[in-house]
Image (tube, rainbow, N blue to C red; front, side, top):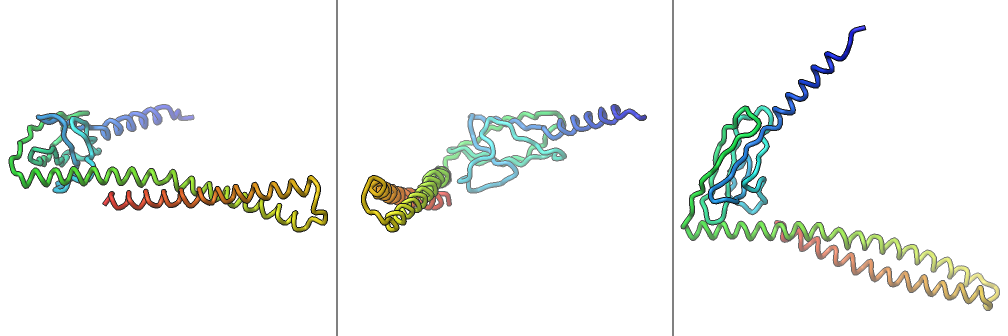
Amino acid sequence: MISKFPLIFALALASLALAQEAHRYLHISTNPSYADAYVNSTRKNFAANPDVSLPGYIEVPAGEGNVLVTIFKPGYRDTTINVTVSDKDTSYLIVSLSPSYDDVYLERQQKALSHRTRRNIGFRLAIASAAPLVASGIAALVTEYNIGKANDKKDLIEKSVIREGDEYARNLERYGEYRDDAESAKKVTVGTFIAGVALLGFGLILSF
């Protein structure tokens, strides 16, 4: 019987080699520090969130030797570079940014940042809308449950031949409780649904 160990060992080595090849990185830092990087993009509108915050690492896909990076920092000229990465695990690069004194250009940068902030707030509001919408769904189920229970008690009351005594009084009491609970749950359903829709709608408007 032929041993499978050499084959398994060879496959493991090949997998390890592929993994090492697939995990090459480009580390970019800037002077001055802290900037936004957009990978494989020549963006002119920076309202979208950056792919990487610099200084930081950019993963280089296996088989690719070049990485196109656009660097954005308020107060400085946007810089687009095409970087040729080495065959080693990590390449390092320091980019010196040029300050801008163009008021129109600087104003456009600030508008992009404001737009980005609005979009991020809108995205968070849209996510936050899930909580009241889920609560509305739960409250709707509670409403249906209490309505069903109230109807059951109502049927018992209407079908009762003897309309007095402790059992009849308990059914009346429970009917009133279920009806009141259903009404309260209905108000919660409507209120949370309106709140959720408002958050979602406002979030979607801001996210554009």
